[in-house]
Image (cartoon, rainbow, N blue to C red):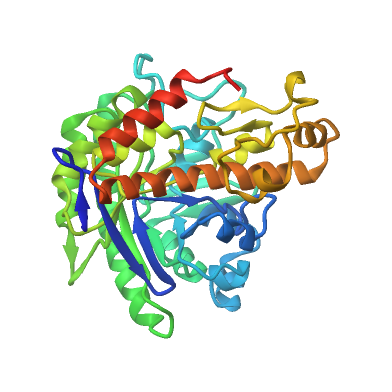
Length: 403
């Protein structure tokens, strides 16, 4: 911890890895299958990314984690020189198990139903106390994840920061199920620590990989605090967690208070990664309440559907009013896209279904998101977080349709 937000839990800091330091708070772009869709690694470096996060589930299915291990690890495989993260595959327990998309926020007013499945979806994953059995979304073959298998796969992928295997519940689950799942995740965390220590010793020819424990508990304060206390103090044969992931579907209206419950219980000298957020208001809320790093597919995903970020709010390039608009997405933006292309040209590329559209708008959205968090970090260092928050969100939330 280097600087703090007065009267709050937010702070700046540095995460040190074998492939470089990460200055926090920081946004980590998602390279699900060892690529950030439609852009080259050097283009993501140019927009200021400090690290990238890949998905253990997807890389296990294709091309296989043994291929990445033989290549020298994820970074070498994808030609990425900076730090890398991998998630554990635990998210697939929810997304494949019940068919829900990866969202940080769900409606907390829903009637709990442990058997809930998303509309027009079928259950593809079954959870038991030992692990998860699931069908591949690619070819329907059956696979098995346990804490030990997840650790093995992530060690073979070779990311600098890896996550313990957990069960991700939804806000549809009952309180009783949340309690059962939390205990299951706690026991899995213990097994992950044991497996991680053994694999680290076996693979001493590889750089050390930091292991983050994942905290669940949905919208319940006692469960969230319990998870933070349990994993924050967990140590087996001298091995403890190097940091923590804040996971689970959250009621977005209570994002800040939920993050604060865990931050208050966790060790101050270890980083906290909040999984799956990327909206400006979420960054300010989460950082103020103690989150250090973030990842989300949203900047690249919404770019591919025609939506781009702007200080006055997000807007849709395909709208007819941009057909003859020869200004950049954002006059103030220094990204490659805004320095070289107009809204009219991007509108044309989208309508023509040209692949270049995806590249140019992904570059802009990733740049906007990374810079937003970088600017928040600078505001903390300069002692003006609250002033910067109010000015930035005031403009972003009030400026829709003023472009």
